Length: 286
Length: 256
Ligand SMILES: Nc1ncnc2c1ncn2[C@@H]1O[C@H](COP(=O)(O)OP(=O)(O)O)[C@@H](O)[C@H]1O
Ligand SMILES: [Mg+2]
Image 1 (cartoon, each protein chain N blue to C red):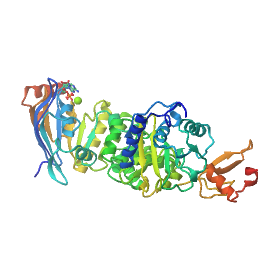
Image 2 (image 1 turned 180 degrees about the vertical axis):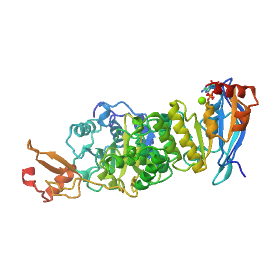
Image 3 (image 1 turned 60 degrees about the horizontal axis):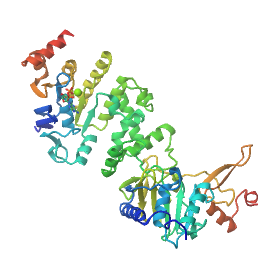
Image 4 (image 1 turned 135 degrees about the horizontal axis):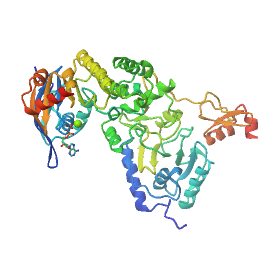
């Protein structure tokens, strides 16, 4: 054993967070306040997600962390190590093997199952904040479903850019009730928000938890004449050839050559292992 | 005919100080009521009680709603009152920046009320925004500019457009021409008078400027120390004031 309580937080704190999670699941899309604790990492590092993971983990869980789709960024590695050390849980990079996945900025490409939980790190939970900074007012707007302001933001997008240019944190309406910020995932991921797994969202600095129970109706806001589009770069992955996955654009040399690769590294690897090849697969996997 | 608004015995105190007291009047559809009086006489307090920004200590504000007929808006639920505030009622602030979203384009400012009541067609919203810019004499080319780039007079005209776009039945205005240059005031008054006539608007206009009520108001209430000291048809009150205080107000304006 080690000198920490299981998963770092004391049992009373975990119970408090679990109560917030249960309430959040009971009222999909509603931001439940909780007493966020100091964690041994800076706020930008996903302390909200870490606290939700800590309150959700059991000793039998298999834990995966992704940061912008990748398992090997500093942020992902340090959170994974944190729970290896404080909870002693098994960790994995394989989406299919994980029971709890903490994520920043992406939803895995592989379809999640009913026995999995996806935990999001959320920087700003309030979708109305952009146009209405007063918290008392945004709370009232949620309770009265006064959501016209969300469309003002989309109107501004179209009038300035000719199309809805919001590409991340694209606002959604949950179960025909609450408007929710899905955290800064690309809008390409929005359709996946209707899934079999439980989704939990934790905002540490802002002290809010919200949730999507399995199969909750999630609709991306739009206009009749400018319908929502889950767009991505119009390419195939240069490594695995996938045409249906979200791509990162990578500059490969000083001459400005670029390649497109899956942002979900586990998805890309598993496709290559199954024999799929993209245009640059030889160099990429050499 | 049912009055559009029936105000009965409105009173508001700030601690021991009286904001306004025992104010009653009826407003009929298509009527414009002016409220005049010197600074501190309780005009804004009264207006804010009528529109629900302040909760009166006593009295009723009965509005003839489309759905349910006359309803006391003081005791109505907050969601219903806020709904009135974005549909049948409009409020024009003295300072345009209090009534505009300064970080949102002119078109977005005009479109907000439309979106608030469910418009979801960008092209139609934009069309209405452009139409209303024209009606308040702002060039269509400014539709994507933020109001911070506008002059004071333009900001005030934009605030009016933003409020009238949903065709409200009752407009509250607190010193709509206050703080503007005299020449700008004249143009705004002209515009307001045109809109009031064209749309058959009912309105309650608070001002300390008798020229404003002379031009816009059918009827007039004169306030002093929180109470109404004289009320009547605008021309009658201004041309033949009965109360000593009104006589003072009128004569001081004549000296200007
Ligand atoms: N928030 C407040 N707190 C205390 N007193 C106030 C407040 N607002 C207004 N008053 C007082 O109420 C009276 C009426 O003020 P107000 O309604 O602003 O008059 P007007 O709009 O005619 O200038 C004044 O004596 C003013 O000092
Ligand atoms: Mg005033």
